[in-house]
Image 1 (cartoon, rainbow, N blue to C red):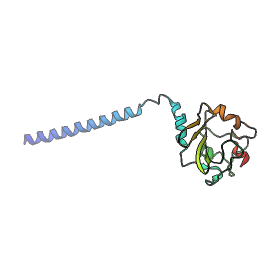
Image 2 (tube, rainbow, N blue to C red):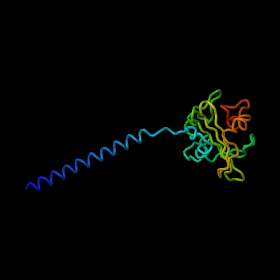
Image 3 (cartoon, one colour):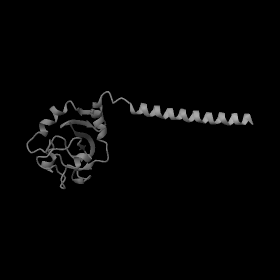
Image 4 (tube, one colour):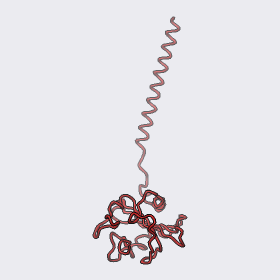
Length: 175
């Protein structure tokens, strides 16, 4: 009988110790996962490659809510294109699909111009609103960059600053 009591006590003690060990493991996991250091370079989320990756988002809304709307591009250097907006940018547009005059896109707005050459997607030209300014980029669909973020202000802003623009977007003037 004593052996049975000792055996039962040992089993209970073992289970108690296992529960404690599992609890300690969960606590340690929680502590270490919550104490993860913030990225050493938060700008990586706004790098050329990160923004290029963002051009592939299928949840964007097309200009004037028409995914088949292929615009001629005759008024600019890009060529035939479709224009897409992330939700933040899209919510700033009026019912006619345009940014109101004298308005600005909110922080976090992302616009992607899908440029076609001979009916095939060739280039992504994009604008991302960060800290009140636009980050610009242009990249071939295969990932080869034409203009990187650091080049954007000098390469893109000149044309996009033409009179009549709506927060650096000219599409609304022509289509």
